[in-house]
Image (tube, rainbow over all chains, first blue to last red; front, side, top):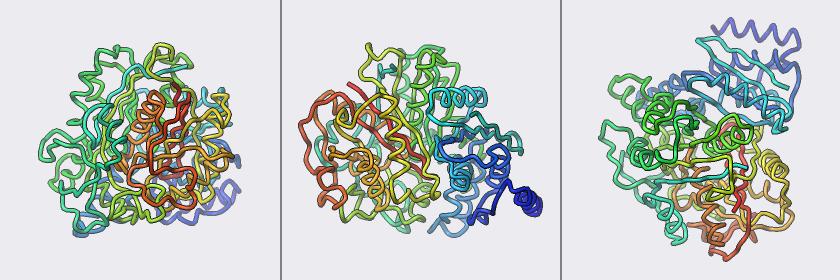
Length: 150
Length: 363
């Protein structure tokens, strides 16, 4: 998977969709890397008062498990900060917001009808000028989809 | 304009809104020595914990805080009421047990908790809203927005997070805990204190029939650092400006600011910079986290309740545990409560990822 993402990001850099890799790329989870690529394609260089709503039906339970297992295995004395930061479902999209300079609203929605509600919220937030644009990032099975409402 | 027609809360001060408000006014902190689990290896051995919770129970700590509260709230809720559940870790002890005793980790997902809360309240639809420490204020903002756009006809915002080894170890790994207990805006502050809380707000579209109104809101992202706030406060200032613009408010319309005020060096400094960008003249600023700790996803809901009580009573509470006001907060943060009436209070929260929410609560 590492090689796939390296290749994907190299293509995006070649196509000038991504300018460089983020300096924290090494700590990005697989989802964070996919999200970066998906958002690069829909944003096409846009930045500023654009927000992100992230939706999935798995929360970040796997990352939670990874952090806590590592903590327990290491003797339950000290957790690893770079794993702890991923125990929030918003972290992968926040990493992208930092990279692309997106300063709009940012939050996670989970549960039934989360994608239709996310779309409605995004449209309303742009209509009422809460943001100039809203990206929706959806994780379905292992695939990341990104849309932009602007 | 949406308003809150019902509210209830559990914090380290006990059950109910009055217990929370009286606790804040007493200026006695609810932060104490904590021994629910072994904290010897962590940066702090203190927390602000809710009384009477059983860590050995098969029922999660958040459900123990929520169950009776949700049953009392049921009469204000209709089947079509939309549930917004704000949490960061939910029933995290199920994940701890999954790791420690090979149980099923999936049960720890807040999406399972959502179904439990929906069932108790008797509502058909619900969503988990998670945005780090700004989760419940963002949930209230989204609920209010959905009521204004007539997407929904009534909303219940439920917020909850409990103190766990999971979170304690995490904040300790970030060196974010104050061994002495959180001292927001104090020049000797060294970090936050973990707290726990559960609460509910029921919102209706018509503020005229409500306890208080949700006047306006603004959300932003610092786009700066994954854990540290921006050093110049620009992101939070943007959120506050959005809220002021939406509510058609001038700086002099705001009576007081209920700050996020975690007690960390960087957060409190960032907030003061943000406030000074928006408000040319000092306003009373206070934090409740020296009183009830940092209740994570529930922080915003706790702050909204206290801000509304303050407007109702014409009192701006002091910041509990604040002794020596930091230079940056002089003239703003107070060690004594103030008699001050007004119509609007600003509530602000910031979270990991640079997430900011500013919300205006009205009388």
